[in-house]
Length: 305
Image 1 (tube, helix red, strand yellow):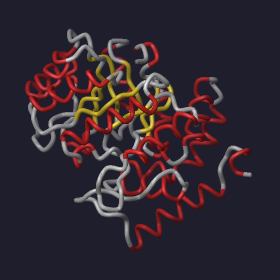
Image 2 (spheres, one colour):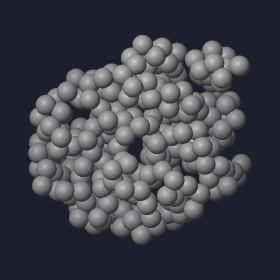
Image 3 (cartoon, helix red, strand yellow):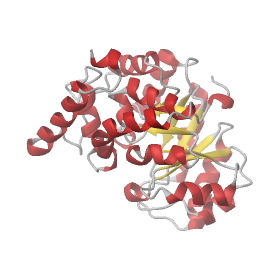
Image 4 (spheres, rainbow, N blue to C red):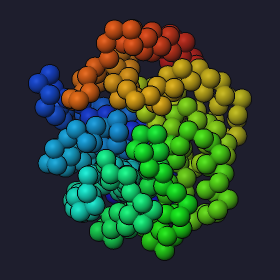
């Protein structure tokens, strides 16, 4: 396991889960994808997030994916698993099992479907935190999950020592400044929405949890290196090239789009699980054209050659 000092910086792709043609888990393909991302220089990996199709997997399948990830790349980069369940008890149970398997941290989501009060949201997160000793990053994504991790909830969680970070996926970049102004260094904030990632970094985010990095990891790593070096000209150059694809991360079909981009780039399969279906028709043609344009105009000379 990686130490907490290595968490919450750099770029963490929200890794996809790969499926066989019959819809079963393709563990070999999933492991190959994770290894390739690590070899391309990503800082860490988010497992079983939205792009990992967490809620489309059976309970034992989720644990199988975590075991496979630890086997393939454990110890090389931090591994963070999403905790996305319908009830708090299930979330705490899964968190315990994930800790036993050997992941390094958790990314905790609100309970699925139910829209909680602040007290309920606080109790959900606190219960997960009390179930484990792992550091926890909260996932704030109001458009996707219909609930905001509001300041009242964050205030209540201040005494919960292992709740240490926030993945900020609200589309309004003012949220970065508001969180940092209110809580200082109590919570580390990571940019979590691809098409406001650079804005988040400029405003104080420590790192980036990214969807499209799964298709173009080298450029994402280069973007973060430019940010950390203070080379905003280079960072903007890469970001502007990337932006048409980064917008896909804000759409409801982001999983299908990202997996299609992975397939085009030779990094995985576009197969998804129901209720999702692969992109079709005009939308599919649009995404293919966007990916192919980006592939033909890659901003790093060695990759574009």
